Length: 345
Ligand SMILES: Cc1cc2nc3c(=O)[nH]c(=O)nc-3n(C[C@H](O)[C@H](O)[C@H](O)COP(=O)(O)OP(=O)(O)OC[C@H]3O[C@@H](n4cnc5c(N)ncnc54)[C@H](O)[C@@H]3O)c2cc1C
Image (cartoon, rainbow, N blue to C red; front, side, top):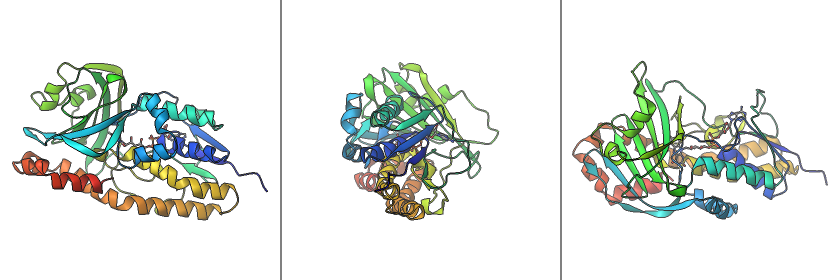
């Protein structure tokens, strides 16, 4: 029998590391190149919901993350100006853990399993040819439909929450505030601005307009300034894996609107989808085009409907409807909540 072929993974975020771990668990040689270093803060709500926790469990990673501090999140509430939804129990618990801990824990596990990890190593080659997987995350796009989209994230203590996740909606942004490890809360938002609009400092944007429920909530917050980070050039247009030339997973395929809290789950899911075809390729049971196409079609089939509903939800978040009396009905309806929650995961 021939020795298994090495799989090369470019990008050591959640998709790349999870794939690397899954392949190492099956004895496949893996080399992973990551441009950054661990640990590092990332712009992310750090709220893992939907299929993510179950996949982490299947890969044997959930107990590891719980030992690293991951907590279960059980409830959520939406707030738009004076309109509040009730506090609702999540149909399945979500997981809260900082990316600072999460990515570093997965990187350590990948190394422990014998994976070859090169951090601080940016893949410069244009070639993502045979045996190479692209998990390089979202691609930057300066504007979309005339808007610049950007994300901001901070950690803080002393923030009183009515639910494990509170989503605060306003005309040009939404900000999630949720519990994470070590008694901290994550404060993370998606913002939009017209080209050339003057910018308030990132930190002030994240705290919300004076007088808003978010601003009041964060009045006594003690911020961990080291955790503050930002990312610009976000693109929310849906893309299909089958249209890509490279073998792509995670945000390198497409980015789901952050309001769903499902991007990390899609990174884990696409990694899990990719494991068997890549094992087949590595062992010489499949050609590279067969493996790449199997991964792309399975990803598109798994995510198409979810992405379509996520875009409707994203539209609603920025729609003036949420600032009219109708918001009371929309936020108060259990049927709408249950439907959208199920459809976006
Ligand atoms: C504002 C905001 C809030 C969010 N909140 C949530 C949330 O609460 N819950 C949720 O589930 N999701 C959330 N997400 C989405 C989530 O962060 C992403 O979906 C997830 O990080 C995707 O993982 P990934 O591995 O595909 O990409 P990433 O985590 O971005 O990893 C890509 C990696 O590739 C590396 N890289 C890139 N190019 C190269 C190269 N040439 N060579 C080597 N390395 C390279 C990068 O350094 C990076 O480490 C949010 C996103 C935003 C913008």
